[in-house]
Image (cartoon, rainbow, N blue to C red):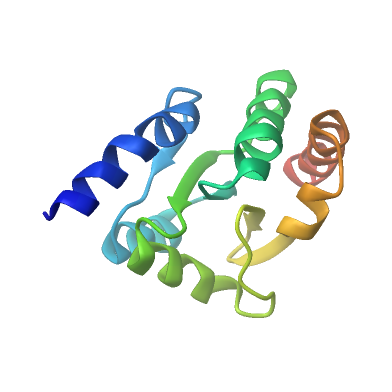
Length: 145
């Protein structure tokens, strides 16, 4: 690993930990993504993480708060990190090619298909509370159906 990569790993470590400490499994290789998507039963909440300010101030806090408040939680909480784990992120995005790449973003996967997607544009144009409430409502509907 070169000096730049080492530096970036140190910079993004807290950004990764924010989600993993909340119970998300980080998928860092294409193989991990493929294994998860092939074997995941039920509902997966997928966060495409990012270093940008809207990920730090909006997406991650909203997702974590939404999951904490849900009575019935998704079966799987997973994340890939755009710009850092590029191959894993590209592999994950391949499962929902019908939506343009966006980071940060939030995907809900159910029954081997994309059930819902929140792109960056909907994250950066709303408050954390609005995103959390919206995500909670959508997850409640999808998990319960």
